[in-house]
Every structure is written in C-alpha cells, then in structure tokens.
Amino acid sequence: MNYAEDFSHVKHKYILAALVGTLSLILSACGTSDKLSTITISDGSSSLANLKGIGGTLQLKVTANYTSGKLVDITNFAVYTAVPDPLNNVDDTGTPLPSPPQTITINATGLLTAVDPAVCTWTNLGTVQTPSWFLTGDYKITAAYKGFVSQPIYIGVASAAANSGNGTCGP
Image 1 (spheres, rainbow, N blue to C red):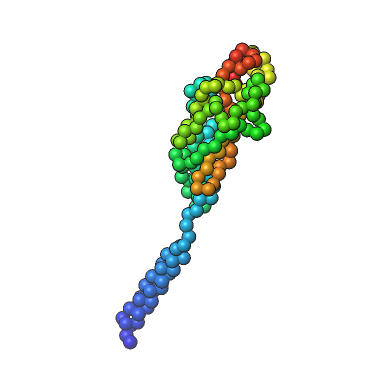
Image 2: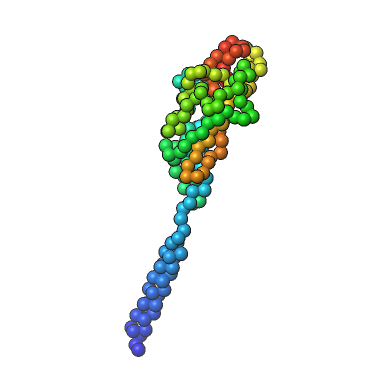
C-alpha cells in the first residue's frame, strides 16, 4: 500500500466516523417530543383586574407552556370557567354574587364583558374626598386546554354605582 492509498483509507474512516456520529445524534433525538407542561391565563394587567361599566370589556390571554420553553397563544382554543370567588363573593351591599355569573360573560375568544344586571364589588372604606377601595367580591376565572387547567385570576366588577359614598364604584 502506498502513501496515497493510506491517506485515502484514513480519509474514508474520518468521513464514516462523522456520518455515524451524525446519525447517532439524529436517532437519539427520535422519540423525544416537546410536551405541554402548563397553561397560564392573564388579563394583561399587573394589578387586580377591574371590569368597569356596563359593556366594559377585558381581554384574557391564555398561553400554552411547553417543556422546551416554547410559548403558544391558545386564547381562542381554551375553555373558560367563571365562578364567584369562594372567599370574596359579595357585592357592596353584602348580596352574594350569583353562580353561574349573571353580571359578566366570557366569549370563546376570552373576551370578558360586564352585562346587566350591573353590580359593584367594591366598597369605599375611606371618604368621598379620599377614597380607599376594598374589594368585597370578585369572579375566579380559569382556562382549560387539553386536560390542563390554568391558575385562577380574579376579576372585580364595577358596572353599577356603589351604594356608599358619591356613587362611584372602585378605583
């Protein structure tokens, strides 16, 4: 065997080794998948959401969180549930919020709307000049998708005038 044949033989070994290595990497990735790990719901605000006025709206957003870190907007595919918050469930007069909710609606795209009968879930513990609002009731809202349920978010409603103070409702 001469030098040229020797070099060609070594060159083929390196190419074969590279191909085998690449193939093993490809095959080792087979069978793994990007799996849905959680879903999250948000109202786009950094504070307590407040649905103001009859016809007032608030857009919810639902995100699918995958094990790879990928995030996918699934707002239009989620199923929404709204119930009065079990711990905070009366209006400003002390009347329990109805279940199922009659003062809000949620459509298939996650749009919340305040509807009649109007309600105020806030009480002013301050004065008319210096209000200090306290939430007396809210709706607990979750989203579901492919067997996963989001964490709850809580929505106050200010679609009616309050019975105390100057008739305003909420911050």
